[in-house]
Structures are given as structure tokens and as C-alpha cells.
Length: 264
Image 1: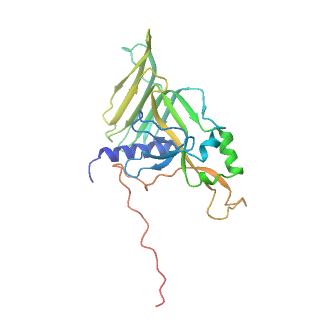
Image 2: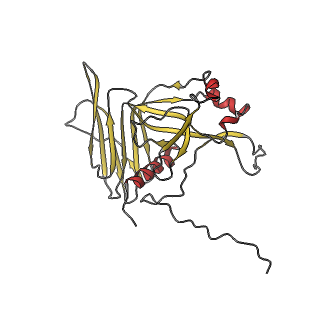
Image 3: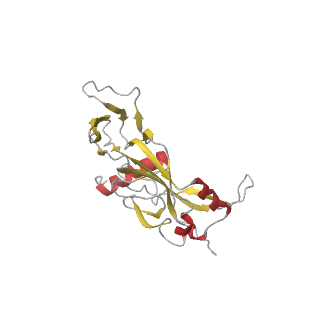
């Protein structure tokens, strides 16, 4: 088994958080992902390759002027924990630290796992009114497009993926108000895996997380409940890879070679 490369580490972390939340990680959260972007998730890295934006590109841009993005109230602490990670309660104590705004602790085992934390996360979204409208009056230009319907921005974030050593990770975000604004910084213990932290005064400095959805038929076969399988709904964008192992590599398929009819 080959070592965990940077590309596979990125893809594995994205996959862990996606399985836990149904959302996608922007591994370089200073890179801009905008509400209304559409494109594909890169197979090798799990990062969004943007092809366009429905707020910018005609013929959709004219319609979208009637449905500008909506900003929602900030969430003080937004946490995503993957499988094989255990969030510890109560939170750890940091006796030597002042002005702690957020503190948390996770216990890991011998399987790859991770977490994502955002402080004062703010969600911006395509209006629900527009998404519902497209179900009743389909817009052909939306067909087959994987669209960013929600983004999450924040002034501070922490991403972590374990190295399978059974580590215990403690985390604290320190904040202080100065004449130039709110200053913050992360303090961590036990972070021996793959990680990145960020904090800046700007309340929307980072964009670590987003939703992608695609307008599609609800089912490929008749439904048992009698509902029309051709009914449209906004489904979650699916990962372009199969199940990944702890090293971020695709697991071998259990499916054998397809049967072929024979006249013999």
C-alpha cells in the first residue's frame, strides 16, 4: 500500500466530511467558491472545478436577478465529526489560556477519521423559493448541472484528519478585542495528523464548506409508494469515486465480470 500522498489525503478528508454531512470541503478555504457556481468534483482531489455560475452566465443570469443569494444568521460553533472519531464531553480545560471562545476534544482510533470546526459560521444560499419553483416549472438550462446551493463562511476554521495512531486532539480558539478589531488564534494539542487552521478578523475570511445539488428525477424505477419516478427533486451531488480505504484509494469492486448470454 502506497503512502498517503497530498492528493489522496485531500480526497480522503473530503470524503470523510462528505459522508458525515452531505457537504463538500473546500480544502484551500481562501479560494473562492460562490453560490450559484456549477461544475464537477475532481476525481483526484475532491475539489470543485468550476465551469460557470448561474448568477453570472446567461440565459440564467437574467432570471437569477429576481432571486439573489440569502444570508442567514451566524452559527456560533459548527462541527462535523466523521465516522471513527469520538467527540469528547465535557470540553477540555485550558487553565493557562485566556479569552477562549471555543474549545473541543476528539479521540481517534486505528481508522482514518477527521473533523471540521467553524467559528461563527454563516450560511449563504440560493433562495428556497427559487429551488421550489424549478420543481414546478423546470428550467432546461439547469438540467444536469451540479450547482453550489449553499456556502459556509467564517472568520476561523480547523480541519483535521487523523494518522491512525489513536491520538487525542484538544483544540481551543482564543479571541480578543483590540482597537483594530477582533483578533483570534488556534491552540492545539495532539494534532499529529493532517491539519490546517485559520483565523482572521474578517467574519467571512474563509469558506471551508459548501453544498452541491443537482436537479434530477427522483427514481429510475417505479416507486412502491406510487409516486411518479419522473418527479423532479434537488438531489445531493454524488462523489465521483467508489468507497475509499484509509489511504484514500478506491476499494476494489466486489462485482465480478458481467454475465453474457450464450447460444451454446
